[in-house]
Image (cartoon, rainbow, N blue to C red; front, side, top):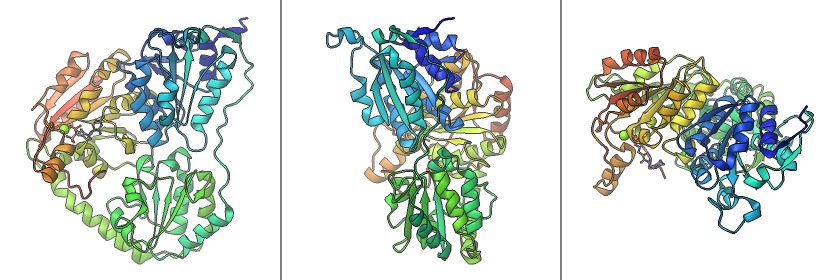
Length: 534
Ligand SMILES: Cc1ncc(C[n+]2csc(CCOP(=O)(O)OP(=O)(O)O)c2C)c(N)n1
Ligand SMILES: [Mg+2]
């Protein structure tokens, strides 16, 4: 029996024992030891065409499964190409582990190929960034990196491995340790009791739940809190779908009304960032009492699963608040009614809202839908309904175009039995289009719907209205992105009329191939935006 291995083998063993089944990568000599060892340990290697997609795929894996996603990228440009995905994962609290190659320690400072201190570059983009300095520490360091990614405020972790450390040997450890994430301490019970009292006694309370609730696996506790306390719920990020759209206490389109008119707003597992106007009026009311609860960096901090559970118990006896809920229901219905005209538009070129409505009608209830783009994704975010959480994946507050193919391929690998739809702007499509080659080679049948309006709409329309001109805001007209996917070995179709969308989607899924349904959309159909995104 072999009882020692090189650092690559030890890292692969740590991944295997942590339950890692897929490693996203792009080849480079500095990471050969981990690639060969991962294969020997039965970890499936998915090799992509640009490192940012490897890292986005690791994040996508995390978002769908709530496990730690893993990518390995080569020294120098492999790591710098992953930087956007690390930053995006940090913004989303996505647990992932990026392993980097690194020039040899023995020649450090002499100018080896791709020599650079990655740790200095990615430190501010990660929860933790380290260099492995000896093979003896390889197993424990890799295991600890994944534990850190999954603990408390989850997030991305980076470790690079100098090539001479990679080839050093050490003893294989016993399979004794277990990867148990630290969920955080219990929040201060008296603060939790105060918060519960405020919420219970409020006349017009609202709860805003964010991705932190998803990472804490606290969707059942959230539902109990909402139902026991009779509190209307609105969500953002990965908390979408935590209540089904038909639930009497779920509100999406009445969100601004609910926040503005509320007397108590409990913001839980969500950042008070631009999406919530930094917690300030006019999005919240002048007199709204804001209660911010999160795993850390909030006035009430601690394990969210525990806090939400405790709040759910403490709000028993809350009034039913019929009047407040009825007011919000009216606002919700009125807003939905206003959207019906654009959703049923028969125009050609297609109105993007009609395209989203067709996708919504077509998609299975458990389909995973990934968004990548500008206005097209704003329409999707507003009009698509998801019955359960984990079924809508967007870039989050960092907003990096080109993350969609990585997210979507990971989603399909994690949930092969489900439909995975990638909604992409035509601009967004260009960033990672070669990943359709990855999906063809690895037989990952994601169906991409391009909302092809020939412009960078989310920039062009506001630029025009604010500056009176638009510069660098146009793309080609009717570009055949479907032919690009076809040329790479996938299925492609162009669609120009709304009634042709559904049959095209059916053929795309039937093909069993990665596919692109390229829908020519109306460039003048501006997204009705009420705020400037800054
Ligand atoms: C990597 C990156 N570069 C630039 C931007 C700025 N940006 C945000 S939305 C947008 C337009 C997206 O255009 P498209 O994907 O065609 O969608 P549309 O708005 O036309 O529906 C741009 C350029 C960004 N978010 N990310
Ligand atoms: Mg566009």
